[in-house]
Amino acid sequence: RALNSSGEILKVQPLPGTPNLLLLTHSLPAIDMKGKPCEDHCILQHSNRICVITLAETHPILQNGRTIKSINYQISNGCSRLENKVSGKSKRGGQFLTDFAPLCRITCTDETEYTIYSCIRGRLLEVNENILETPNLLLEKPSTEGYIAVILPKFEESKSITENLLNRDEFENIVSKRSSAQSQPS
Image (cartoon, rainbow, N blue to C red):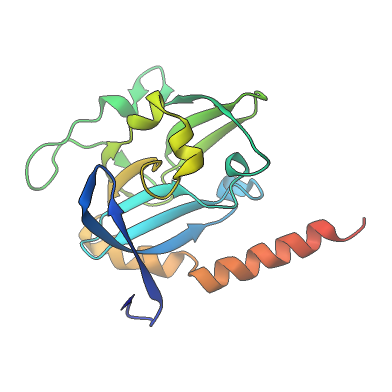
């Protein structure tokens, strides 16, 4: 078991695409993105400050047996996350993202569309092109092979990421309150 500075147990899992390397992370949920209830995202942060953006297990895409029809990294006419190119040790050239920059749009077979956001400010290192060919990875392995993107926050902002997001206990408390509120008769 590994612990972070707050004494929380950190998750150890294979680094996507490299089964022999482990990614030591702590999970930081971002809830109700852009005010949309239950559209929760998850940020897995490595000790080297790299962040992997995934869907939280409470996201509607992962609920109720949904099926994914398409995933689109084309954000607007002039912006495709697939065209992101980084180079060198300092990862020059990566697209800079704000907290609420859209990463992709996911459409389910029931025609419901969800926009997945970056949740944090930083440089886009990569998007997961594997989920374009195999969308079920997003449903079956959302926090490993089904990740959305990898982002490198600015060094001076990397500590504030953990301060502005929920820890696991806070997230579970909110989910529990949300479930109680939904089960109450109106």
